[in-house]
Image (cartoon, rainbow, N blue to C red; front, side):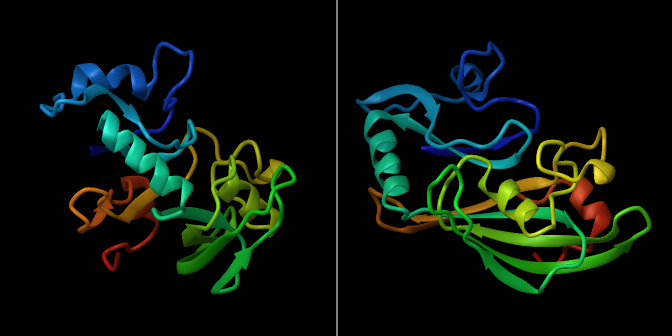
Length: 200
């Protein structure tokens, strides 16, 4: 198994020609283990989201990682830039598509903004994995993610800079070595231009 940085504006998988899944065989060294297979992502990130993506390179690692995700034994942390005044921390538990959903958040930094009144650097810990969960949850509490054309407020859409949502880290116990694995993908430059992120 390995991990890669997923850029914005590309699908993880699907019928489109330009996907992460299609690009992996040409760009990753294959495994030399007996059950080596075509490398494939073992979870998803939205088209517009950047960040860390886990890849399985053997049949056994893909199965093992899938089991860990099903058991909620993989801890994922995201960072987002949100709009508006926010409580320092909290949780959002509104259902998504009729299913229970749970996201925790902590405001790490906050700066005044001429156009948006206030921008926040928010650490996000999703406890469930619904489609567009973090985007929907933050929009629900009145703090949409900067650049979110789907769930943002029409008069507060930032055009041309993309969605400010980043999959920052993944932590889990390796299914074969049983050692703790903690992987990080540093914040994109556009986040760093807004906040002093040296404390992360």
